Length: 247
Image 1: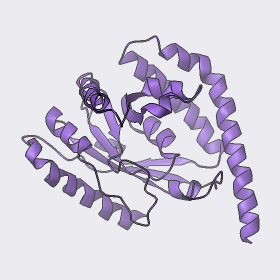
Image 2: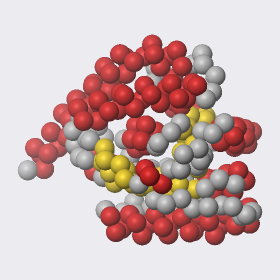
Image 3: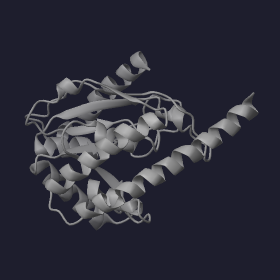
Image 4: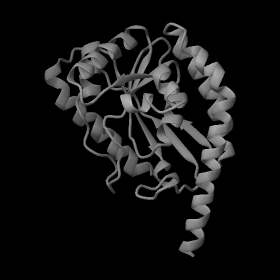
């Protein structure tokens, strides 16, 4: 019956894409208005739209999102939130799913996508990974975001995990950022998004429930940049063990 699953998966992908496009066009002008606002008002306004949008869109594509562990977010505390990254579905789940105001880090190319790129420019810190000056500037920009009391949401694996392993090895950036800002790391894990958009399949999708879990925060108080490898390994181990236990 693989042929039937293949046909249904492609039909579902068309449905999901068309519904995403239609709902985006309805919100196009309100999102466009955000470009003219200063932060943090701009990001707060954009997130209120995104949360309402995804609260409607995700159930309509039969991918309801269930969150666990939001009580770990202390009122008034800013975090560097780290998440695993399995699928293109991750961003529309994590960005509205993180409690409070947050930004993520996005490639410059995402901001150049016609129409849709506008969302990345509003809700993200943009970086040209091929440009060293841009990489340095984005680090400074992320520090400014944190100084405004806005969480930074980062994917320390760097790219989507297309392997069979629970997590890919982490890069240093998120952990160095948290240590320099002396802010806690908030580990988080997405479940089942790889089942919705399986790696290696072009324009194929299947509906599935999504679970988004937050783990207890990890303090960086008193740490220096010399502690980055230790902190990175500690968070990697916590997230891997949790993922294996709860997948």
